[in-house]
Image (tube, rainbow, N blue to C red; front, side, top):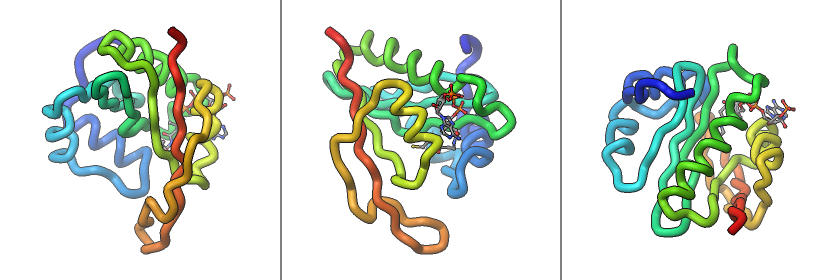
Length: 141
Ligand SMILES: CC(C)(COP(=O)(O)OP(=O)(O)OC[C@H]1O[C@@H](n2cnc3c(N)ncnc32)[C@H](O)[C@@H]1OP(=O)(O)O)[C@@H](O)C(=O)NCCC(=O)NCCS
C-alpha cells in the first residue's frame, strides 16, 4: 500500500471505475489542496479522508471492480484510522447510501455504527433520491 502518492488523474480514473457518478480530476486536485485532506492507496483503490480537529471523515473510498473482496478496502480504512489518529482525530464519520450494501458491510466489519439518517441526501443519475446513513467509529483512547 505504500508507494508514490496517487495523482488527481489516477484518482479520477479509479473513481470512474468504482462509481456510477465519477468525480472530475479537478475536484480531486482541489480536494488534495484542502486543509486536512489525505489520500491513501494505490492503483487498485484509495481512500480520501478529511481531518478537522478531533473528527475525521471518509470523503470517498473506492476499489476497482477487479480488485474487490480481497480485503483492500478494509486495509485502507484501518490505515486511515491510524493516519487520522496521528493528526488528532478521536472518531471517524461517513455517509453511505442506504442501498450500498457492500459499503455498509465494509463499515460494519470495521466497527462503524449508524448514528443518523440524512433523508434524500443523494441524487442519482436518473434523478431519484436516496437516503444516507450517517455512521461513526469512536477510536479507543
Ligand atoms: C465498498 C468497497 C470499497 C469495498 O471494497 P473491497 O476492497 O471489495 O472490500 P473488502 O474486500 O475490504 O471487504 C471488507 C468487508 O466488507 C464487506 N463487504 C465488502 N464487499 C461486500 C459486498 N459486495 N457485499 C457484502 N459485504 C461486503 C465484507 O464484510 C468484507 O469482508 P469479507 O470479504 O471478509 O466478507 C467496493 O465495493 C467499492 O469500491 N464499491 C464502489 C464504491 C463505493 O460504494 N464506495 C463507498 C462509498 S460510501
